Structure formats: structure tokens, C-alpha cells
Image (cartoon, rainbow, N blue to C red; front, side, top):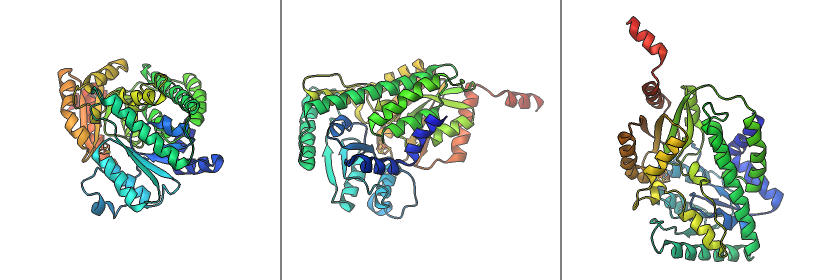
Length: 381
Ligand code: SF4
């Protein structure tokens, strides 16, 4: 479908998109590292926030500078030193995992001319003092942006940014609703292309395209009947895993990834104090593996999504050396085992180990719905 291809093109040619945006608007671009980054604040300043997404290329540097980091963050840095992010005017890291911070910090060392800022987002997001701390961090960040851009970020600009972002998140939720149908008119790989592309795009552009795409998808023929799967694990950066799953007769109907559902699941509730309103949206996001160390709400939210989207099994794709998901894994396994949910866990880097992953996914799919062809073979044996 042409409209879906447009999103895929943005994702594949993301540096071209941002460079053209700069030429068209004369604005600046900030690269950000994590979904706790308060994009509305930057957007209100007329700056385009672009999520730094890794793409693997041969690498002879990060072993020395980032040994022990996950490959997701190594490739982020590698993409910077190869010049792919030369159009970026600034980089901002919010409190996420230590490897994200290390990618940010190492990039600052090789690109010291960039505007750079680190913003703390409380790890105990529900803590009593978290709101005040978040508000004070938002104020500091706003002040830094205003100093850098030499302009004030006024309330009306914040209101507009909040409205654009809330509309955007609603549109993405509407898009995901199409995946709840028995035979969805949108495959998991297509949905992931759209959501990732949106993290790079100007949200007014993205909203225009989504408003065309969603009605058009509803006129589309439903997909064939496939095993309905849920995807969990570390952040993602492309849809190759979803495509592999589709080639094996499955379909990811829902995810609980930080840059999947975690990107758009809740809105900013308007408040007179705009910074507090934006801060509360990020603190109130469903807990990620990083921020779920106290109340352990993540398993419940995973199960709710699993049921809502009528998934039949779970795939957990964890990045090698991803300690947030490594340490949170036991709570997820416990949930899946208690509920008799079939699942397959594997580790990967920014490439996909095709043979091993194929075997694992095939085994999961056959556990859920044993293939007739295999049973026939069994009876002849
Ligand atoms: S994959 Fe894991 S370790 Fe790597 S940046 Fe993401 S959360 Fe951090």
C-alpha cells in the first residue's frame, strides 16, 4: 500500500527526511535517546526532535570506547561517527539506562560543538517527590533550550505542541486498534514501520499522513489467518523481526516495547502549569523495565495488552547486555508461566540471527497450533 510505503521510506531514509525538514523550515534538530524525552517542550521551541535509532554497520571503534555496552547503543554511536547524524544540532539524553547515557556521553566527546543536555527522570516514577523533581528538571531543560535558541518558549506554543502530540498519540492508538481484528488489515511489520517513522517525523506531517492511512486501511482486505503473537523486550529499530515472524505464519498483533506502545499509550492532561502537565505524562507512562523496580506494575500491563489483543503466545527479543530487560525478565517469565502462556525468549544484537531465531519461532508456532503437515508426516513415520 502506497501510504504505508511512505512511512517505510521515511524510516529507511530518515536522515534525508530530517535534512529536508531543516532545509524547508530553517529549524534546528535535536537527537534524543529515550522515550522519556519530553518532546513537546522541544517541539514548542520550533525544534524537530528526532529519535536516534541505530542501524548496524561494520564497527572498529566501539570495542575500545564502549566495551560492555549493548549493541543497540554501540551502533547509535557508530552512526554518529560515520557522519549519518551530521545534520543534528544537539543531543539530549534523559535518565534511562546507563548504556544510553554512555552512548550520549561518548558522542559528546567526539561532537563537542553540539548543544547537549542530560535530564534526570526519576527512576522511582511513582515516588512522592518525583513530580517536584521532574518539574524542576523540566524547568532547567526549558531554560537551557531558551538560552541556546535565544527565545522564550511561551505558553501558547506549549499548548499547541501538547495538542499536536496528543492528537498524534490518539492516531497511533487508533492505528493499533486495527490490529485487534481477527484477521487484522495491518500486519505487525507495517505497524512497526509506522510507529518508528513517527518518532523521526514532524508530528504535523505524521498526523496528516495517519489521517489518510487509517481510513484507507479499513477498506483493505483482511490478512490471512495467522498465529497472533505479542512482542516484548528491548527497544527496537526496524521491522525485520516482525517480517521474519510473518514469513513463518505468525503476526505480531501487539507489543509492549518502549518505542512501540510505550511511545503513545497515554496523553498529556492539560493543566495550567504546562511543564507539570508534560512531566506528569512521562511519569505516568506505563512502567518500562527501567522504571518498574518498586511497584512491579509491568506484568499486569503486559497481561492486559495480551488479553485485549487476543494474543496466543509471546516472543521476547532481548538485546545482548541489556541489563534493564535482563533483570526484569524473571517477573515476565513468572507471569507467562503462571498463566500457561507459550513464549520464546532469545537474545540478539542489531542484526538478527536468522537461523536460530527461525527455529525458535517455528517451535513456538507449532506449540500453539501444531502444523497439519507435520502431523501427517508423523502418522506416516
Ligand atoms: S537495549 Fe537495553 S541496555 Fe540497550 S539501551 Fe535499550 S534498555 Fe539500555
